[in-house]
Length: 107
Image 1 (cartoon, rainbow, N blue to C red):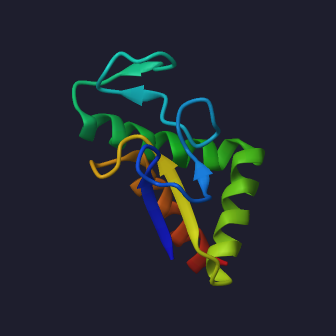
Image 2: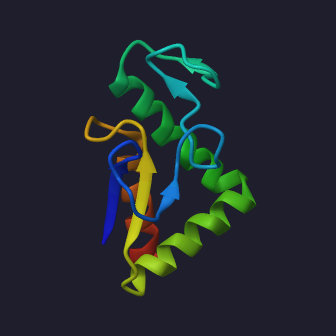
């Protein structure tokens, strides 16, 4: 099971996926500190993240290995909790969740 939760509401353990981490979205529809790509909407920033994650999976060995580690944990039945600021709104964590699941199925 993979859950994406809000860091302000969730009090348990998990993996923080916000800006400043390898999982952070460098795009946003708001001009926050750490935003490298300013988009017109939340949906556009999430779509940008999806393409960026695909590209980095192919080119960034460290990110690929970390994603594979998460996928193995997921495949072995371990609960994965991804912690971000966006939830319950649409979030790049949903993209990461789908990527972990897809990689787990391919293992």
